[in-house]
Length: 243
Image (cartoon, rainbow, N blue to C red; front, side):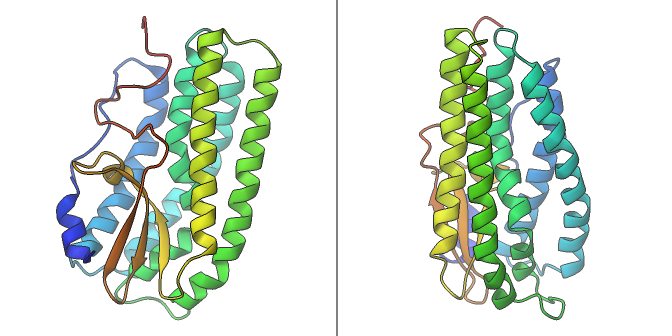
């Protein structure tokens, strides 16, 4: 669809409702803020606002080191959060990290939205890195699956948490694998981006990625196939019963 029409279907103000006092939600605040910032950039471009490479670069410069620090911290937190309910809530939040893990792997693709790209920042330069990004995402999915299997084998989870963790692990694995598959069949004039927060809590059908042809200003949303689309009120997450 045309980029302008796509922008009109999205809620710029869409966001998760935080559950104040929950330490997992507190940990997710910067993650959601960064996701929202990438969504603002995408929707500004789709609405026809010129995007500068400086704007993309500044956001990327703040974002990349944040993720590299936080991802390790969240992994340690998961290993420690084995009390009833906590592990499931944490992995539910890790499901949101699917966006960030993918986004850091394909960060150069955002420069394709810039109206004044720096020399060498072209779709062709991004295409050259797409195969490498796909390989890295495959390894990420393998590593996350191995971590989940090790946790399950430790037999330290109550059955309800084990089932919830299994479901969220499968969701994250599916999102990574589907994005990787789409990367490997990417058209030569397109870039592929993970869907930021606003697109995952859209008024219409939520999506988990967007295929963009910047020169044609064409956007193809790739629907959420997980069966567990994120809701703005936070409903449906595991580990919430009895809290």
